[in-house]
Length: 257
Image (cartoon, rainbow, N blue to C red; front, top):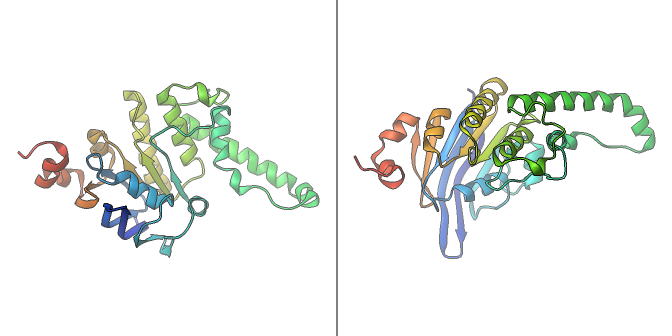
């Protein structure tokens, strides 16, 4: 595990007179899976919106590989290796499962007029084969082998979630932000999700940050856990350290014992 890929420093967000985030510091390191937990209203989704560029912070800085991205758009961040999933399903329902995954890689193509298109045709065909091969492999890893031709809009919740995961990882992201990825998944699908996330971090060096209400899932998958409460970082550490933290147990885990 190397140094941080994404860093939030002193991030603050206000909604009118309400402070949603206050001086939040967070590092997401290459090759690790980090969990973000906290009670409802703690600011988890707001922080995800800030990290992905959907919302600009009122104060603080964001760094991606050391470069200041505080004012960069979501599109710019995506083109530089950041991917995010959402709590609500965001699939292209009229497209096939395979095409949903291919969409994530399309931004790498294009360019030039007719002459350039003709000259680039062999290279483009090679890239297309590479993308389809990668897409098929990712679908298989996510337990979706044989479903490439199915329409995404007709999938049950669990499989739709796994298609979203496949689409997010198809282009080998540097940073992956997963918002409630285990919601609606069966037990076997959760095991598959955990395996994909671990592989992505360990084998491809991706920095993964996930928000999840299933504390047991977070503690099992994540090497490090950050706890938000009322817009501030309440605790940070290994799963064992977070479980043992009396403030965390009182604020979130439901016990003071």
